[in-house]
Length: 497
Image 1 (tube, rainbow, N blue to C red):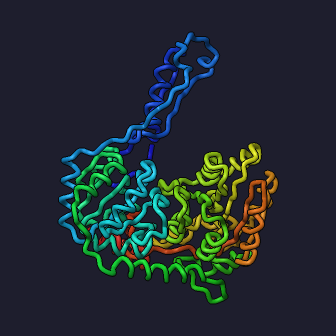
Image 2 (tube, rainbow, N blue to C red):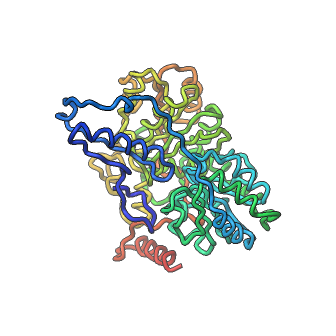
Image 3 (cartoon, rainbow, N blue to C red):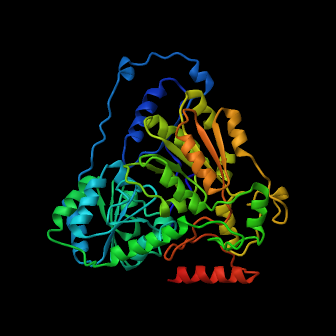
């Protein structure tokens, strides 16, 4: 079952179409249904065809047309005029509208239309993980990532928005900050799927994103938003924060971004691995060195938060983040898929050590197929993101640090991930300092083989949350210490509004 749900979703099967084929003649209808689902913009999803071995060995006289090449035209759903007029009326009454660009904007190839719409109307836009790279990061109206893993600029503007225009977004818990970030704003939702278009009591425009935004632009007449310097100031303040995050250097007195930690964590990990680079600085250095049009692939841990906040790109569709609330193991498989789709581009998998240990078998496939992918392995000694959530709720570190016996008082297990990748046939590097990382990144560009860089990043040096990015997750209602009491108070405050 799909756990990637918002608080107003019902559980639903991960596979949108499943057929257990027990007789050969069933295969024809199953294949047609499978293609129907795979080519439907609203209902698309994973497809499973299950064939027992005895069926696979049988004979059936299939019709010849089943094997003829067939093209599938994905039709754009045009908007209903009445829905467009209702949406336009709501926007015209607003002073501070905000657009949220979701994954549907990418699928619709609506990036330019949305950018033109926002520029003509003076409306800023923010991005979800799925919507990032639909429009250039340098666009003056682009505030960057929004929500729980969003940045201070987008979240600041979201708090003053009186209308939020969602374009191809599911309005998930992370985007809405568990429905607290823009809870008082009127919602306009443009989506090909009724299920998502109707969320948050929205004015629903069920249509293709590109067609809908063009129609909405025509319906708005001479309307412009009332922003003055708010957008520019929010972006400038965030740029300063990014510069700070990018320039953090390890020293013995370093106070990491996340302070909920075992007191000896930094010293213990540094002793075990020699780590001397901070995660935010590592990301900034990587962005500076790798090609501007490189495809970045990620999925889980603390990296999606850091990347939605800090990663910038002007290259279309160059950010591939499968962020169904941490799809651990997608990173390397997704990078191989991206390389198959875009063989002329450098592809980088951003993966933590915890996710790497869960699934990295497609590295062998990359070697077999001669496909160069670059695996950037951020080793911070375990499941750093979960450790942050755990300790931030007043629970002592429990089996989330890669220590002997999973005990916070023991030494870290020092793992040479570069050596494991070398055994598969990868070109490998280990980086413990910014200088070593820079050398490895530059050398990797000349490689023709798949590459893994084992980056020893200090725990707790990832980005922390910013105002407006609250997330409703587990919290004990029977607190036993002061941190648990504060966590409960914070949760109740947000729930009660």
